[in-house]
Image (cartoon, rainbow, N blue to C red; front, side, top):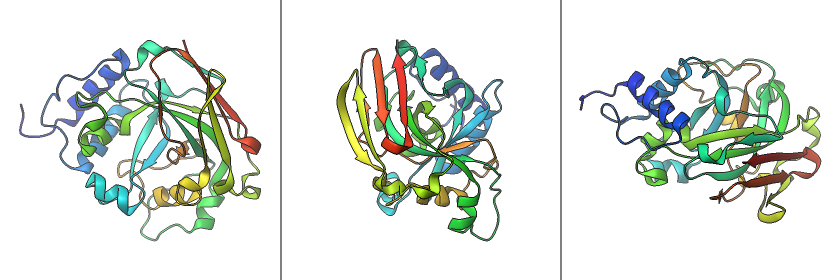
Length: 259
């Protein structure tokens, strides 16, 4: 195995495993050992044909998570075009390995938020938001170690992103207290999770502000992209086809079916 991390080969192997719904048996070179190498793998994946970045998922947003992961910074990973579908969405269950459902609140950007030396204020970030969406993220992981893999390696695997389903756009979102938005997740009409937006830093908008001030080092947060801010609910694992509906009250509902 090479003593360096081959980011191009790593990205190609991860995307091939994701497309083929299989574990990646081994890294094609030394695995990423620093989070900047994981970001380089993201950039290489996004250069593959048809793998445009539709948005971002934010993670590692507080001191407890950073201490646990050993990564001393906010992290993010791209949401890629082949696995992003608007609600009501449909996926093949067989295209996932160990999927879980997460209920999240996402922000659609109406203008770019380029990296800069001075931090963005909350108001500047809010002005860049075109709409807020209720959302479902499907998490899945292609690494041999599964969800127990080293955090830097899981980060390289798009932070275990499997699929992303945004619901309807709420453009008058400033009138809502997103921390108080409640969501109920049902699997084939049976409730399996319930939470509120306050799980994410008291208000998920705060996670967007963190990302604006800790952006991916290889590209710009761009108008038209969507940023999802982390799971409010405990991830729900499932091992068979079915339909999930997440109801966010005034923010709307999201539906995804696995056939």
